[in-house]
Amino acid sequence: MPVTPTRARLIDAAFALFEERGYEQTTVDDITDRAGVGRTTFFRTFRSKEDVIFPDHDVLRRAIEARLNGSTHETALVAVTEASRLALRHYLAEGDLARARYRLTRSVPALRAREIAGGQQYHRIFREFIHTWMGGGRESALKAELMAAAVVTAHNHVLRRWLRGQTDHPEPEFDAAMATTVDLFTARQSPGPEGGIVVFRTTKDLDTVLPGLRHLLSEPADTPRDD
Amino acid sequence: MPVTPTRARLIDAAFALFEERGYEQTTVDDITDRAGVGRTTFFRTFRSKEDVIFPDHDVLRRAIEARLNGSTHETALVAVTEASRLALRHYLAEGDLARARYRLTRSVPALRAREIAGGQQYHRIFREFIHTWMGGGRESALKAELMAAAVVTAHNHVLRRWLRGQTDHPEPEFDAAMATTVDLFTARQSPGPEGGIVVFRTTKDLDTVLPGLRHLLSEPADTPRDD
DNA sequence: CCGATCGCCGGTACTCAGTACCCGAGGGTA
DNA sequence: TACCCTCGGGTACTGAGTACCGGCGATCGG
Image 1 (tube, rainbow over the protein chains, first blue to last red):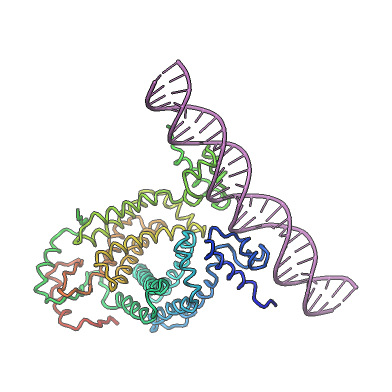
Image 2 (tube, helix red, strand yellow):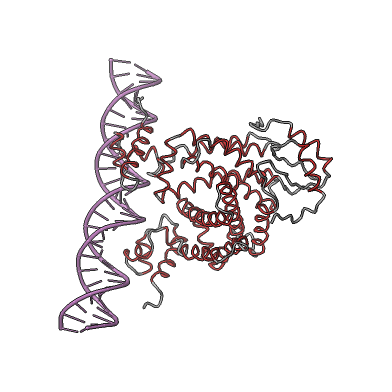
């Protein structure tokens, strides 16, 4: 049993070299030379050169799925928020490693694509969970997908602010962002087939804005143009 | 000037071979052999083997940007919907080619990642446009990003249904999906200090829903619930 | 009509990621 | 001791992507 596991040595060597020379300028041989292991070992440990950047993806995904599956129908919305929080805290715990990964994904298109595709998995997990929660019907498929996209987007928004060093208190921002996001979907009734009442807010009273409303409604809405 | 341009021959050969043998089982040499051109020509025409699957990406992106930039502040929301419609119609016009691409992206992880990453560009374009439209302030950054994500998600939702053969009338579904999506954000738009006009759609005319509006406005609107 | 130039295409040779396969070292077991 | 099992290393190969060079035809100026 080695003092430092092979896997950790490879990750350290890879990130160090990527920072020094850049991703494309670093070969797998460079990494294995610095880590003091054979090339074969690298590809046995990671499926590809890209994978060394995203090591714990599967662990996080399973944790999120477990958190969602451990909820009841009544606590589903909370579970979604808390599962997202798991992801956020995962990256916060990584600290500088997450920041280094962010720098790499910003500068190397292939890594950016890989990261985005990985994030799509979370979208899918949340979409299926929310859709099931909504009953799984065809009419709720779009709303489930929109809600899943919103949750993932809100998470990414806060995470990215922290990764860029734009905030040192990401978790309060996360709470606020999630509240904003969930409100989008829970704050009003979904309209039935007979059309719906649209709830809106303004500082003026209804009669003041009514002429504006009538004007907007009097225009054809099928193929609106603005040029 | 060749009867069939080299570029088109390469695309045809590539898609045909990908369908016959699969993506990974087809080499670039196979493609160039069938197209009757040299290997060098392939990499001069497309940056990579993957690129031959996503040929007109730049064209569509520029069309969308042009549509957005051609709008005014008042017609921004319509522009977002119409720019998304450009994307939808682009894929509809491709017909079987878009379907073949969809089959490939479902079965080849690398292509799926590439497609998702490409879609992220639309998210970014819409996000920046909407954020600018909202004034560009820090407090509206999240809402702009959420709205952009929702628009892209709604578009993808309908497009995917068409790609999977689940609908033969995608454009009416697109209209409905976009109405649902835009309503999420406009129906309860947070008013500025001077308040604002809220755009909404309903199947009934204004006078029919007016009592409902008056009733809702008379209630506290901070934390409305529907369960 | 002729030579020069330019753009397009093909060929060659190279780097490097990723795969398949083989081999030896060590460690546990009968 | 003989056997096996696992793990790590080495070798050789395929194929994507790059760099570079040379040919061929078209156009243009003289």
